[in-house]
Image 1 (cartoon, rainbow, N blue to C red):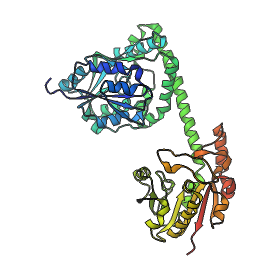
Image 2 (cartoon, rainbow, N blue to C red):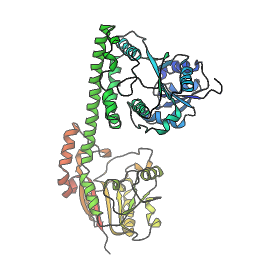
Image 3 (cartoon, rainbow, N blue to C red):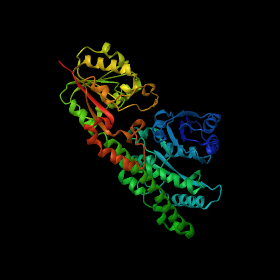
Image 4 (cartoon, rainbow, N blue to C red):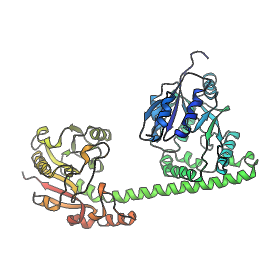
Length: 483
């Protein structure tokens, strides 16, 4: 084959030192060239990176392994993309055979036969190996009802797909289903194999499918029909080949039950997490309702210290708003979300030099003044009053709560605490939000378990603390500007 096209092999890794060298060595031995290898690492703590560099692989670091496939697609230079796991070993002819199928047969994607490496001889390894053998025996690669998915792709086929982002499971299944609907031509390669180091510990196996369960509903939302069918027992279990070893067949049924139990616990954990989030966020209903009500009569708002996720995103916005913040990443995040009409980067203690007197109907500082020294906070309130025509609104915790910087933002440290009397003496009307103060701690999280019980109590206490703010976790203070 003249002018051989470049193949990019993408490998996601996280603490993969135990098997990565064998994977990379199998790539080095391929009968095909040219190949580039890109390692997408989730900040491994072992010798993964050292091994990758020894094999001259390109290494990049990513925060979410669930998005590695999409990120790899964007930076890969090859005409063909090959997705390989860090515990897989390639037969020497795999890449060459895949390229031939695409170049000579016009294929867009190739599903490759997978076999197990049984290293410890445990029952679990043998059951998984038999499972893989059945899949390969039946060429079970149907996009909806099958199991196997393509790993080798013509890169340009992805220009038309909707990439599933942020998924920890089933992203390959969803991509395959889309490619099938687009009419992509797929081949099944059985002359060469990918050999997979299998899990030998039942505990590790349970943890794996527990994680699958936690990510299940994210995938289900993307492609309900496909993911639902993929959750059923494998179609290969109902083949004649499945009965060739009856004792293993019974073991496969047991294996499936174990998967369902582990994944079910993961699903349950997902729902518990969602319930916790709902209970915590439900405590904000009075906050958003109150904020919306007090901004109902304004046409312009200055959001001081707007951050990346201003509460203005959660209310019906009928006014023109400007966000000001000193931290550029926060402004970028807010811009991406489209929260404000305009932005200004600068020190919020200098807002009186950035804007004109009475330029805005309302000036707000939500979860801001606790990040300033007390004197700076009083100065800021005075400057806000000069810029506002109708009112200023301040929201802050009731008292001092320790908080360190996070998300790389040094301005997130808490430096002062504020109480009801601080605002009353400045002419504010004060309301309480987010439930009874003793239930929450740093980052407004619930302090005690069972959090479901305390979360419900926090939500139920909302109407009470609204009128008795000294009991509230957070203060919502409004000052009307006298014209």
